[in-house]
Structures are given as C-alpha cells and as structure tokens.
Length: 143
Image (spheres, rainbow, N blue to C red):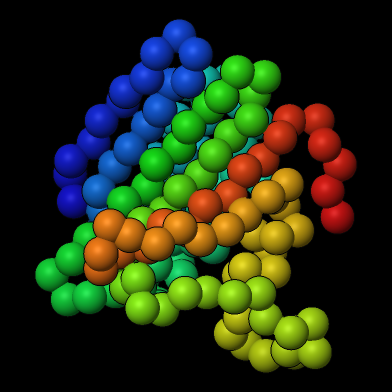
C-alpha cells in the first residue's frame, strides 16, 4: 500500500500511489488527491469527487484478494487533470448505467464521474488489469 511516487517533468507532473483495495484505501486515495492537488495549486472539488467514485468502484467491483489498486494523477500543460484508477479485474468493464436506474442505490458513481469529467473511459490491460480514467479541463462548466 505504501508505494508512493511523485514523478514528472516540467511538462506533465505525475503522482502515483498503490493502495489496498479496501474502504480505507479508497478513503486514502481521496485524501492524497486533495493534498497533491493543493501542492499543484489545482482546485480539487470535482477531481476529489471523481477519485472518490473511481476508488470506491475499484474496491467494490475490482477487488481481488491480495491485490491493490493504483491511483495516478497527471497534470498536463494547460491544466487538464487526468485521473486513472487501475484495478485487478479487467474482466469487469464498467459502463454508464441507464438513467432510469437513478433510483438504484448502486451505479450512480459513473454517472457522477461522467457529470464532472470532460471525458472518461476504460483501458484494458495489462492483463488481468483495467484502468478507468477521467479527464477534467479547467474552466469548463459542468452539469
């Protein structure tokens, strides 16, 4: 869980951390995101919510006993923030739930991600993993 790295260049700073696939790990992902975005002087509200939802999904749907999930934050020139959460369940690819399911207790996380992010998606691999990512562009109005 404690493998943490701050990497980057003048063009694209990056923060990455491996966390336990537990509720504690998901909570820590949110807190570390707040801290890192503060260090980068980037507004954190929407990004922290996106991380909270993606980390919760990694814990609930992407957990394999003994395997962690990875959080990566990348800050691109111009201020675009890319959030990536990689888990060990590449066989469970998320999809945006039907709007009719809004009354359901589950499935709202990706709708929240879609509302806050300018783009989001899923990349397969390396096997058996998958990465769910979201990009937030500064100054863009969201619903």
